[in-house]
Length: 321
Ligand code: 8YV
Image (tube, rainbow, N blue to C red; front, side):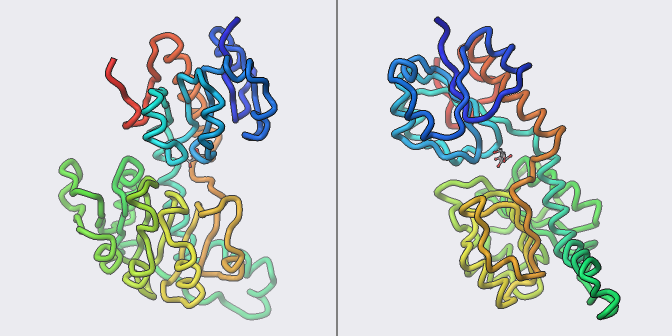
């Protein structure tokens, strides 16, 4: 009998055929469905297909006593508990890099949209207001402005590269300054100082205990009424209540948001505001990028089945032989 690969995502027939060499597959829609499987079946599960946005309870993971490998669809690994995964020496693969371009593209799109009011002015036209009220109010320029990147990692670097095309000055904050980036990228040693110094602040940091609500009320106050916040990281890295208030009271100029604390629920107070552009966590959601992510997540399983290690492991899930 082959071991079982339990999947929280749907797998294409083509990928199933590749995985079937090593595994029998069971697809489930949610963790509740796993509870309906017999203990005997759960004990045969050695591989789990999860994602960057699906939380896994300890209870669920405990119900898989022989779990050896998880392949996670996405670059964020915040749903996985480091201590737990390391304690069980579970191999944890993920899909970094293949989505950098796409996520950076969406960050630029949100920045351009909220500054130039693309979707808000689109609504204006569709509502007949161009005819009844006349020209749309003036928007705000992007080219030549100061861009702050909170979290200058692989995605942050792609954002900076695109922003150079807009002749933006790049400032950033990380735990430490990077030595391997263009000298013109200015390191700022706190999120508050970064917020004070820029016209646009793009958040591209991973979500973890250290970055939880790193964009808090003080950072939003430092950003001020002329600057914009763009978040393509995770809802958890921003104090969402403080952000909603800042947008309602216009103590920041606006925001472009792809991620939220309690997805798919978005604070309804935002729906009435034209100074915010909202997308439903789609930064990596293009045909090309999702294909590349799927391919890498399948390769992580195949590599593990053949060599005992995933192809690309989460940094803290690497073990001595
Ligand atoms: C998700 C993401 O993977 O990569 C990440 O961290 O947040 C996204 O690309 C995607 O939404 C599927 O859950």
